[in-house]
Length: 432
Image 1: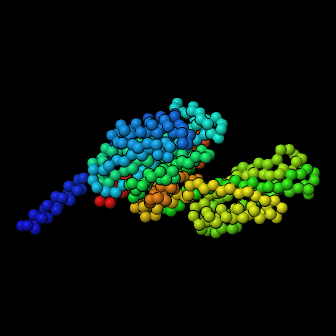
Image 2: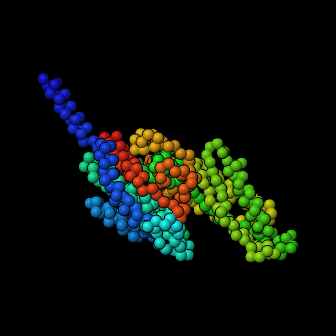
Image 3: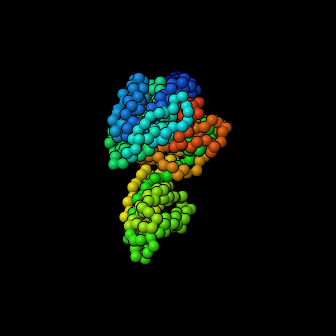
């Protein structure tokens, strides 16, 4: 009799536990209910963009929205960053979801009724400002997920950190910013999430589909400045000087052999691009010097360091062969964004369920960069793409990220809200 009673009590306990689980259907219903508000938020952010480390009004609006949910946002981290924690009603781990907040120095040409007419200052010039990379959508979708998760927080077996990060596009010259500064100022110091999730719209993916891969997802990004020092002379008597223009040309060609001939191309892709070159004042004067700037994209940490060394060495030795010299400056950017293999495997069924049949696609590593990588280096991370165009349209025919014509098919934002919400709920409930 006692055994039967014990089994009955155990069965009742299991039944209560099962009933306490947050259902996928409830999450989807809440996401659908939030869609109108999510679109409204997105349009406000789109119409009112601000440049990196200048997201003052954006941060204030985010904080007001979070406060309206009954949360207690913290502001001012990394200049304009905002974060808040939804405390679950049950004990469990902490996970994080992240959105970036800054716009770009791009003058909008979409013709949308809520198009940006904002102006700002970039590198000493007055510029148009636009959410040309989709950060307006990222903020709105994380806020939408926050409203979903906040509505079910009593059943959440754990808690959620909401991160709104400034300066993803890079801090202004002479300033620190972005994810790296948020971490430096202690974002994860007191409570470190077990996992962090991020999502980016566009990046050439099919409209309304989610895309993911395990391992390296986005490239590390570094930049360099290189000055070639020659000897000025008359253009008609080049033997009396050292021509830095010719040397710079040889260096540019030499740098292209690094990715193609000096590193193992089967290990990981890499790119070395010279994007600016300047020197000389008139046609018949060989100048003293030439300046150039470039970008470096890598996916492997060891290869990244090796390429840095080879750029300096290649440039220096080519210059020496002509009697010139160089001044080399390297600037580190974000590391590669690497999706944690175990976390990716664990959460792929969640993404498949959210995306529906055929809605989750595999993606090749992308040579664009994201400073979400700093968060993913601090704790296991998973970064996902969401196609921004209307389903069925060729994504390659649509304006790309950073274009003055970039836009979002707003109904797909509900997929993003569902993705964030399901990832959090599934991760926390699987940890019970």
